[in-house]
Image (cartoon, rainbow, N blue to C red; front, side, top):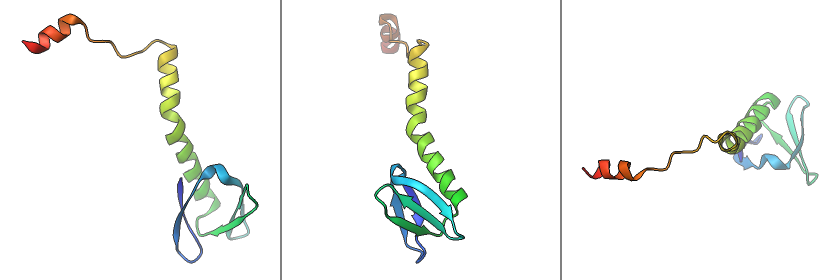
Length: 88
């Protein structure tokens, strides 16, 4: 979810998956996939930055894990000698 501000300064959260199009007319108009339109104070540039941050936060951990798994950089399982050393 991304945080946006309506024209009446009310803060709300929007699921970026529902955004179809963004226009500046000069106000920022967000067209949603259900046909609704939202008018917000945030600029189109700010909106795009928020959406990109959302996707980075959503997919970066998964992408890093896929990379690590592909190249076999898995956490090492503790050996019996490690357990014994920890008990000493």
